[in-house]
Image (cartoon, rainbow, N blue to C red; front, side):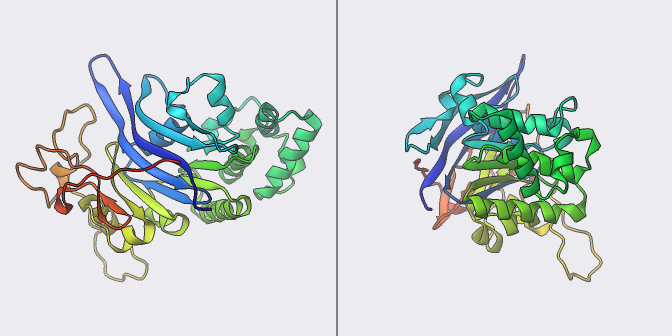
Length: 339
């Protein structure tokens, strides 16, 4: 289970407005192997969600994937570049749901309120499988039961507004798994639900992944979730990956000043000292601004004058399998290889 399933190489997704271009994703690269989980973390607005949506060619207008490759290895061993497919074309629609599926951030807005939960799941099943409505309904009931929804035979005929937040999220997971995808993109899967239900949802995702031998991309701002769920981690800031590698290496030895600042801001269980959590000074720069050099340098205590504010660092391999975008660790650029 060590073959590369998905290779993202120098992905660039920009949003074009009348007088400005916003570089939402600006040169992200990573490899995802079969059965592996990658976590993408960072502050709101750093490009996490757009990275996931770019993989499925679901970027809303006026955004567009303008560069890079999204190489996917199919079951028949063919390798296709999703970035070259027409966003509304037939080929990419064959991939969505069947090869790659996504759990969206807000189940209340992602589920159609005028159709029952069952109708929405059945539609996805029949889109990719030539089966009858009766058979598709049986599969939908089985999926709802698999994700822990009681009385699935009754819930299937309910609407999204009739369900609790946790139940809606489980229905979203069932919908995403309806065609047995090889890759699941989970975008903030616990954001809109009660804290007491979050652990259940995460445990459910882990169980389903192990059962189905599925790869997963977990998008979140919660560093605590990532520590328990992923194999590798990508830390993003303003559209760029500033650090990535094995989750244990990054947690035990964070290299980038931004990653270190994020780690310091995590509340520690058992810490009895009454003190304020450290915060990162300043705020995220306006995405409309043409900031030169390293994007993090205005907030960085380690910034090197006349270097960090004039040149943009490349992603380099500071340690084996541990990559960082920072001049503190040299200038040698690295390459990522696809399937």
